[in-house]
Image 1: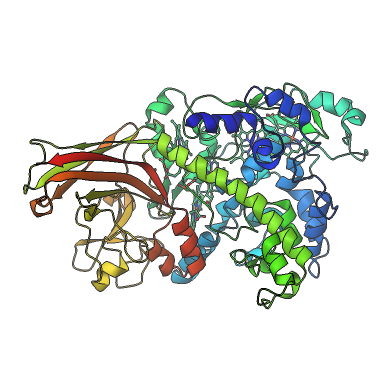
Image 2 (image 1 turned 180 degrees about the horizontal axis):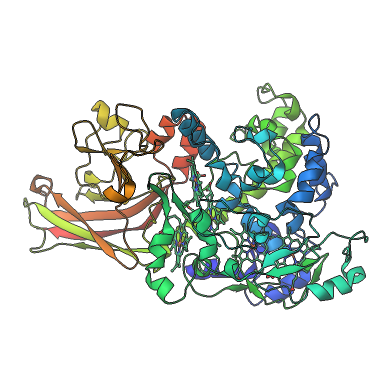
Length: 618
Ligand code: HEC
Ligand code: HEC
Ligand code: HEC
Ligand code: HEC
Ligand code: HEC
């Protein structure tokens, strides 16, 4: 099964997804390069004849109209957009476009959470969150409360190309305090030394149609590359991926886990597992040219290729016109996109035909969507984006399956007997050598749990653990339905999600999903402690309850099924699956997420390693 993932990664996302006319195989990669259009389809002339990135620059200018007339240009000269880089690094651009790095700034959940925590803390959190998620914007001096639609486009790109390729000093675990070198596109990029052929391109600037020197005609290009070893090391990632809040609460802990892991010992880096050809495994890298300039392949067509999808369990829930990052989508503003009803048939030929024929009641279109032509163009953008999202979904399942294993069920002691209580267990193993499963990042609240069900000989589901309530939440103490008494508490739930524990006034611990003061508890998140954290080892009144599994470790999920459910002779079936979701719904409600956001979070839930076994009761 994984062959197909490899295949895609070798053969190229750009080609495999976007140039659907070209079926490519792994061996066909060379041919594919020959046939690759001058640039990625995103840059080819659009249906309306507009070209990119000129069209992009125009829309950027349009979108800042009425504000500082130079601001679009200005940000381009300081921090070039990914679109500009993508002109020559098409495959990397396309991988990045649907990555969670590209999503960091646009993420609706980020904004709801960020606003909620700022409100709860009376603003003391300040720009803490935006400095990682919207680092370029922060460096440009955009205020934290500036709405997404008023930000520069490069700030909307989140962790964009220059966020990594314009950093040339080593930063440690500094909660996102890094420095991105400002400067025009012609300034050097930072890399690991894969620009041996850049000199040749610059010398033959006419052939490659590039501006080989400042002021020269041709496509703009960086006139140099700085070699910086740290970008190839795990340490490079931790200035953002290890997060400590003021009192020792850690929102990201992946570095701590990695540092002591078998992977670190073996010299396997974050990049090896997250940018290689197999999602989540250090199985080497795909091959692809480093750059294709105006249709000409530069250097070795089989150079080592670092996949910029940054595989992981995360997924986007933004409007599909706004994410993945599609330069064509920039034709409309964020506010305009939000009024495009993508769930209805707008812009689909059949639907449009029916509308024209009078077979549909005409929706009250907002001004920018009144013409069929515009709706069809918008639908085209959404369809391109949905292709990228399908791939993301596949990679996500692959990284989760590659990082874990389920064994069992094991019936310890005697085999299942009629009318007897049945004790069983499944073993969940973290097959990833790099860090815990899941790493246990708290800010993100990601969930991974086991869902086990017993089906009796009549095909009825008679027992289950890991079921969900009416919102889709697990039936634990946080479930709103459990609190209301409409759903039974899931006593045997196996859940790997990390939780905060707070000490309440009675001195007992209780689970809490966001330890800020919404009742009489202390405000450990934000207020200075009166006892040094080093004395208590954790902040007063709050600590973390980690339940994730260490590298190569395992944990047993134990269940007991009452004998009264096993009185019928015949064949019983035990079904198991691990489920993964980015956010709990109770938490989304808490920060004021919309129904649409809830729906999309649930739509993307995946089943990892689903299987069933049968046993007989005589
Ligand atoms: C030091 C950098 C850093 C800071 C500061 C930071 N984050 Fe994050 N954030 C991350 C990283 C890295 C991830 C991905 C973690 C993962 O998948 O395990 C993430 C993921 C998230 C996610 C889940 C993904 C999504 O977009 O839905 C949300 C929500 C989020 N952060 C909100 C916040 C909020 C709110 C704050 C401020 C309280 C904050 N972050 C501060 C680095 C940071
Ligand atoms: C006009 C084409 C063009 C544009 C635009 C362009 N590059 Fe490049 N890039 C190249 C070429 C050519 C090379 C060298 C390839 C080789 O040596 O095989 C290169 C190499 C690189 C490398 C490898 C450096 C190393 O030392 O490993 C990185 C990283 C890079 N570019 C990033 C970027 C970023 C970021 C942008 C946007 C700010 C960008 N490029 C824009 C053509 C371009
Ligand atoms: C989160 C950080 C990060 C972001 C964002 C990022 N890169 Fe990279 N990039 C890397 C790392 C790490 C490497 C590989 C270094 C190594 O060899 O270990 C790399 C390698 C490259 C290379 C060298 C060729 C290769 O495949 O190894 C190019 C070119 C490049 N990146 C361009 C881009 C472009 C264009 C973008 C934006 C669309 C981008 N990068 C976004 C971190 C990043
Ligand atoms: C400037 C800060 C920054 C840097 C540097 C950075 N990341 Fe990230 N990374 C983030 C943020 C923020 C997110 C989550 C964004 C979101 O989903 O809202 C993220 C998401 C991810 C994810 C996806 C997680 C998921 O749940 O799917 C992976 C994997 C990842 N990063 C790996 C890396 C690696 C490997 C490096 C180093 C080469 C790196 N990152 C460098 C900020 C950063
Ligand atoms: C041996 C391979 C391997 C190495 C090394 C590795 N990872 Fe992962 N990573 C995985 C796999 C597999 C997953 C998916 C399963 C999971 O969520 O733990 C993952 C998941 C993640 C996630 C998603 C969030 C989560 O809670 O799991 C982030 C973020 C991440 N890795 C960042 C990093 C960073 C940063 C490093 C380096 C410090 C790193 N990884 C090293 C294999 C690896």
